[in-house]
Image 1 (cartoon, helix red, strand yellow):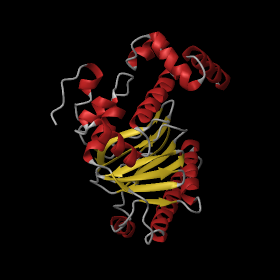
Image 2 (tube, one colour; image 1 turned 45 degrees about the horizontal axis):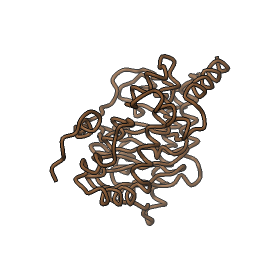
Image 3 (tube, rainbow, N blue to C red; image 1 turned 180 degrees about the vertical axis):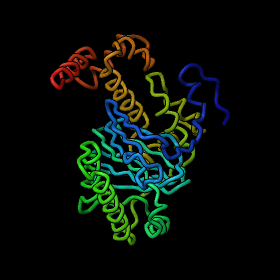
Image 4 (cartoon, one colour; image 1 turned 120 degrees about the vertical axis):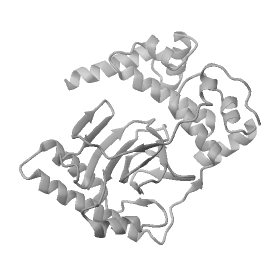
Amino acid sequence: MKPKHLSGAQDRLLSPEPVICESLPRIPRVITTYDELRIELPLRVTLESLAYIGVVSHKTWHVTPHYHDHFELCFVAEGRGWFALDTVLYPVWEGDLFLTKPQEVHHGAARGESPFRLYYLGFHLAAMRSLETAFYSLTGSRVVRDQDAIIHKSYQTLLRELEATEPFHAEMVQGLLLQLLVATLRAYGRSSGAEAVSTTLTPAIRRVLDALHARIGARIEIGALAQLAHLSRAQFDREFKRQLGVPPGAYVRDLCLERAKYLLREDDQSISEVADALEFSSLHTFSIFFKRHTGRSPRAFQEAQMEVREENV
């Protein structure tokens, strides 16, 4: 099916997102934003096993298809979402961890329906060859449970140790990292006989998801998404719900709503600018949409967020 000519937000959906390679960081730095903390090369040694560690809290978190030149381990501490390795999609819930090996194309997102928090860690094992072999040898499902909460506790303790910089913190970090990696291998070993539930994410739906998360806006029409997927509207609705567990209209609405909340929290974003950024036809239309789904006007929500910030100063 040849897509019809679309304009504005619909036309931009047809532009594919490139698959990029994320390499190891080269200089130490700490990145802090409203919803994320990321520490790169925390021990200031480029050959160290721990390349970066971070935590992100965002209901509409999403990463487009990419791959690394190192291992990456992620842990869902709150909420639920999905993780796709090539064309295989795994639903993930609080307490799940998933691993990607070097050169594996992957992406993922939060479901956007509840608070979501994700810990992530990039590492390489050139100095730990026995562990490197073990991680490369992992087969089967990439999503396993943190049954005894060791993974979660290890992430929290690692971040606290890195932020505190107490005496001998480098040695402590190395010990905590080794504990985390061994606990991960044991978790995968325990689950080797039980596959996690997975769904094959078709290229069409993957293309739609990447377009949606890259360009969230109110003017996106489900019919345009169906065209992007080269499916009829009815086929698209069925496939999207089968693979993601939620109708496409609800998915788009939740993404738009959570992006609006995020933008309203920013100090330099007026309500009018947020409405324009999300391509609402008018400020009035945006206000009606926001109040219908949150019970508060954009102004009331923004003022409440300002009060919270002032209390925390």
